[in-house]
Amino acid sequence: MLDNETIRDAARSLFPGGVNSPVRSFRAVDGAPRPIVRGQGAHVFDAGGTRYIDYMGAFGPLLLGHAHPAVTAAIQAAAAEGTAFGALTPGEVELGRRVVEATGLERIRFVNSGTEATMTAIRLARAATGRQLVVKFDGGYHGHSDGLLVKAGSGVATLGLSDSAGVPQAIAGLTAVLPYNDAAALGRWFAEHGPETAAIIVEPVAGNMGLVAPKRDFLDALQRLPHEHGALLIADEVITGFRLRYGLSGLLPGADIVCLGKIIGGGLPVGAFGGSAKLMSQIAPEGPVYQAGTLSGNPLVMAAGVATLDALAGGAPYRRAEELARHLENALGAAASRAGVEAAAVRVGSMLTLFFRHEPPRNYSEARESDSSKFAAFHAAMLARGVMLPPSQFETWFVSAAHTESDIDATAFAAHEAMYALAAGATP
Ligand SMILES: Cc1ncc(COP(=O)(O)O)c(C=O)c1O
Image 1 (cartoon, protein in one colour):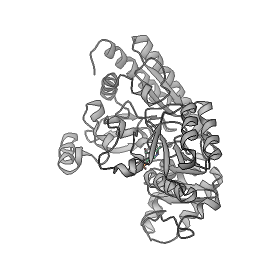
Image 2 (cartoon, rainbow, N blue to C red):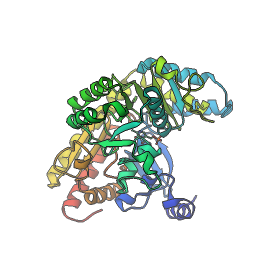
Image 3 (cartoon, rainbow, N blue to C red):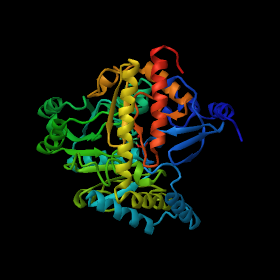
Image 4 (cartoon, rainbow, N blue to C red):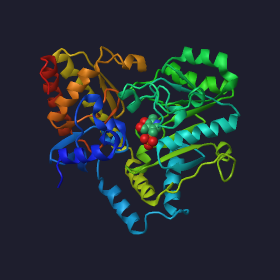
C-alpha cells in the first residue's frame, strides 16, 4: 500500500494544493494532511497505519461514526441493484417521507450537495419575491456558489480570503453582509433596504467561523423582520439539520425555505431544500424556477440516508453524542486553565470549537481575534497524540455517537499534555 508521503506527493501533482477541497490541505495549521485509508466508528487510520480519534467527522455527516454497520449494509444492498437510473426510485420516497415527517416541510427536493441546496433556495426566493438582494452574515458559509462566496467562513476564512476571485462584481453586489448575532444591524438593514430584499440566509448555529451560538434576540429578529418586509427567511441547516436533534434545529421555526445536507445522506453526497407546498410549486417542472441533477436522489445516497435516520430516530445517539461532547468541553476548558493557556470552549449539542481567545466569540470578527497560530500548534500536538481535529480554528468539531468515554478520556489526556507543551512553547 502507498504510504502517506507518496500519496501526498502524487496528489500535489494532480490536484490544486494537493486536495479536492481546500481545508483538507492543512494549510491553516501549517501541517501535512494525513491521507485516510479507513474509518471505523470514532476512529480513522492513515496510510501509515496510525489510528486517530476523529473529531472531523467528515465535516458533519457522520453522527453515527464511520462505517456504521446498518449504513454500510444499506449502501451495499442498494449498489447491488444498480447505482443510478435517472428515474424516480422508491428510495427517494423512503427518505423523502422521513425528512418531511421529521421537519414539517411540506415539499422537498433532493440535490447532491449543500451548495446546490442553498444556490437553488436563493433562486427560489428571488423568483417568489421578484426582488434581487440577499443578506448573509459575515463568516457564514453556505457553499461555493458565486453569490454566497462573499465574506464566507469555512475554507474561505481558513485561507484568509474575504471573497473569491472570479465572482463578478455584478453578482457579489447583490449580496449584503451583516454581522452575525446583531439584531440592531438587521433592523437598520430592513429600514433602508426592506423593499429590495429577497431573502436572508443564515445558519441557525454558526458552524463555519468555528462554532458561534446564536443570541435569542437575533433569532427573534431573523424571524420577524424579513416577514414584516415581504422577504423570505432561508435557514441553512446543512450542518444543524438532524445534528442537534431528529429533524430541524428548532431555532428558526419561522423559516420559509430550509436547506439540508450532510447527515441526511449518511456520508454520501447529498443536499435538500424545502418549504411550503405553495412555495415549492414554483420549482420545475411544476413552476418556472429551474433546478435539476443527473444524480439527484441517487439510490445509494437515499439508502444511506434512510439507514442513518432510522438509527437516529429514537433519539439515543443524540443524547449519547451530546453527553460525550459535554465531557470533552469540560476537559478542554480544564486542560487550558491548568496550563494557563487562554482558550474558550464553545459547545452546542455534539458540536464544539476550542477558540484560542479569552471568551466565546459572538460573531466572526471576534472569532478572528483568536490566536490561530496557537490553534495550529495545538492541532499539531493533538495529531502527534493520535487526535484528529479539523485543520482550522474556524471549523467545528463533531462528536459522534460512536465515540466512547475512553476516547474522550484519551482526548482529554492528549489535550492536557498539548496545553502544557503549548504553554512551554514546545509543540508538538
Ligand atoms: C452551513 C453550510 N451550508 C452549506 C454547505 C455546503 O455544503 P456542501 O459542502 O455539501 O456543498 C456547508 C458545507 O460545509 C455548510 O456548512
